[in-house]
Image 1 (cartoon, rainbow, N blue to C red):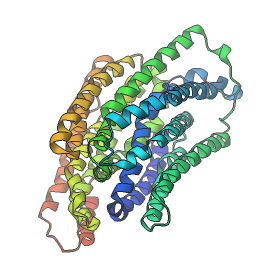
Image 2 (cartoon, rainbow, N blue to C red):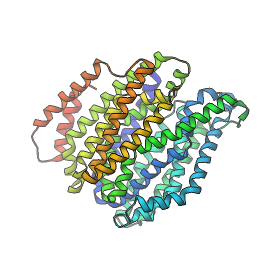
Image 3 (cartoon, rainbow, N blue to C red):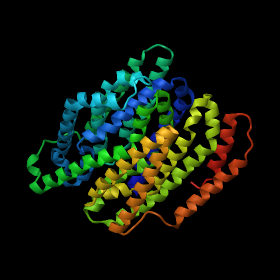
Image 4 (cartoon, rainbow, N blue to C red):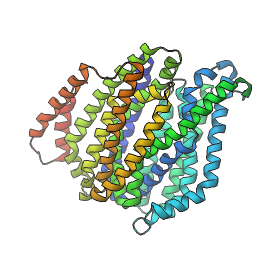
Length: 469
């Protein structure tokens, strides 16, 4: 865990600087530009939804099979070029089929009368999706060398600077809405160039394509894994990212912005998981390939407890100060996202508490299991979104996601226990939950001091001083 902890610590610093910048955006800027922010997040969410589907599993192939190709002297047998080619094939098919897909989305998902910008800027999903495919591929490939900090700065942090600047320029009427969209595209193009430059700096953007290295057995294994990887990605996106798209299609841009804000808070909660998983997954893949289940079990349990500690700390602090955060926003409409934040954060907490079980399954011979689970969950989540959004609006989408996470995580825990003989929880799990409740309950009796900033300092300070982190 030494390498994991070092890189995870550096990665977390970057992530939380990004959260701080994002929080300022959410509190002071988003309430003033709800429609523009809703458009931006709708476009990014749609591209993020589609990008894993058209990557043809190249990003997971890059980690799963890297140990077989690894050879520093000859550039790892040109493995990176194979991955780029696989992703390129998926992007080509997506490019050719996009006019048909665009027509389906415009006709059956979007409501032009409520969100005309969505229809106007839908064509920009095509280049944005293709760019995101290669960004994820290059970042995942860099993780094979235990390098996740710089890719994280480029992938996640840069847009937190770029988008607020674009929205400020739009708010001050210095640029039209079109330039906000162009700026988003430009941001991710810079990310691509930055990731390539970083791999060149590491000496890893090289190697001649060596197809002769790929035996018939290895080729068939990769094709099988990629095929299931694509289907897994499709199911995963439908199961866990469809909520934002359903909100985009069934409501308006303001609701999309409010739901995106709820997602921001829940994703901020889960940042430690991304840090841990980003560096742990190549180690897990290697340990499983070597049948070193002792190492896998160690990472599994330690990641579960560590992530639960951080997750509960962040959620306790957020929920304690949420009323004051809404007061600072000074826009009553934003409070519609209160219970969306609650359910989405609970879903993330549950996911964090299970540690790296998804990675254990994905990089084992049982990776096909996720295929079947994702298909079932996709059907359940889409059906629940259709039903619950009609009744509860954007909160219904959050409830649907929460229920999907419960089913998915319980099933994965059971499966890992059955196949590998271990599960993530110990008696320390209950102790951590109890301590978090003990820190939170006293804040319910704190008086309102009449100043939201002072309330946050007192309540947040109490949580920070008493929480055992």
